[in-house]
Amino acid sequence: MNEEIEDLLHREDITLAQSKKRATAFFIDEMLLSFLLIVALWDNFASAANMEEIINVTNMFVLEYMFMKIAYQAFFTMQYGASIGKILMKIRVVDIKTLDNPNVLSSLNRAIFRVISEMVFYLGFLWGMLDPARQTLHDKTAKTLVINV
Image (cartoon, rainbow, N blue to C red; front, side, top):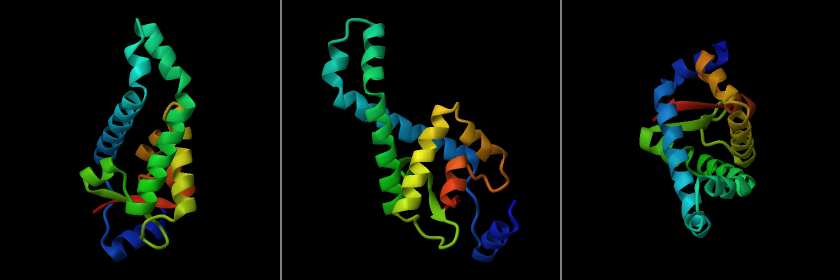
């Protein structure tokens, strides 16, 4: 682990969020956003005659869904330091330098790189599982940590 991060965690008596908590928060957020997408597109889904048409409807709105994910993650991270999933799991995102909620640019950066990590076979998330500071690609680019509350 980066010595600076290790010193910071020890000095401030902060513990990093476990991968299991982060994965559960991720799952909660994904289910919530998927539910919102289904509600927003209910008419399209209801009129689909078979699974192929449902998949086609989903594919038509991929960009909107990615934008929704970026907006959701950026807003909640900037405003509360945590998405709804993270709030439920009692973990939060903090800026490494200030130990406060990330600012607008960091939150947006983190949200965009989070979606990019998802699109590239979740490699950015795998990186976080192998990193001693548990920083995913989106944490590294935004200079954030996910900690226990």
